Amino acid sequence: MESLVGSARAPAVAILHPPLTWASKKKVNGLRAKLGDDNDPLFLTAINSASLRFQETNRPEPLFVDPYAGCFVSPNVKMDMRQCSHHYCLATKFIDDKLLRTVNLIDGVKQVVLLTDGMDTRPYRLSWPTSTVIYDLSPERVFRSAAEKLAGVGAKIPRNCIFLHVPMESSSIQQSLCAKGFNGNQPSIWVIQGPPVMTLASFEEVLYSVSNMATNGSFFLGELPAWLAETEIGIKSSTRQWMEKLFMSNGFRVDMIGYEDIARNLGKQLAPGDYKNILFVAEQLQFSDDQMETWRREFQRVEEQGDEEGFEEL
Image 1 (tube, rainbow, N blue to C red):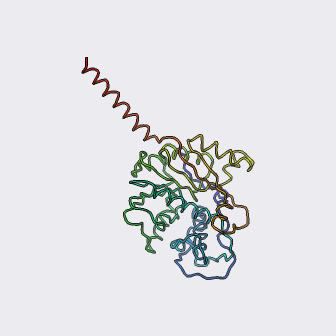
Image 2 (cartoon, rainbow, N blue to C red):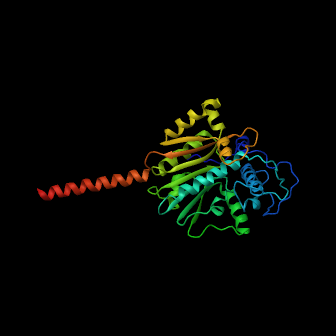
Image 3 (spheres, rainbow, N blue to C red):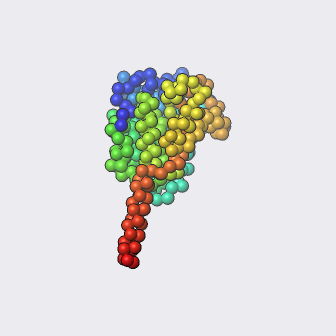
């Protein structure tokens, strides 16, 4: 599979989120860390997102609380004191809630696959139910650096849960996840938010892999950079049709979620400005490769058993 990372195209990475800091003089106590890898766009994008989560956490009425985001950001980060909610934070709240609602409905082992920028703290900050297996698929060097910082501030995975990392640089998402124990016969929920999607072709390969591994009824949700659609169709008015065609061709029914709708439902005011991401929820309508193989073997077993019984009657 074509790697999502590799030679990073700076504009594509930078377009995912707004500038790292905004004007304000409020100083907030919290976990802090020195900004590292200043020239690496993968680190900068991940730190940018962590900064937004850190600022949201320290609002009077936050959408969510991320107690670990501060260990990734600069000690000099300035707080945005406007009352408006940022698109990214609204999306994070929506994804958090959808994740937990869905995973709590799964019986037995609960498989969660997070395609992230390497600094996603969901495995540590969300209240996962027992027997949840969380796979983080992200850039290796960002994840390793983040893991050290998280360990340094005492972050821990909930008891009776398992957390596994799969490098995004892997040549095959499907093989790497299966090698870590992913079971294509069990339900799963997949999230994409923040990974460095470099080309439309690379995302299509991710979608193809998810389609192969996710059982019927599984969910895939998150954010995609809007330029993926613009690259293909050139006009934003056709984004919905483009999304539906792309996802349905891989067995998913997809819905686009409006940031304005989330803000309204939460009683928040959406921050002004153009946001370059698409928020979506997709449901798998077809069967995974493992499900098909299981049923093929069962059908073959029934046929062979029938042949043997017929032979005995003769």
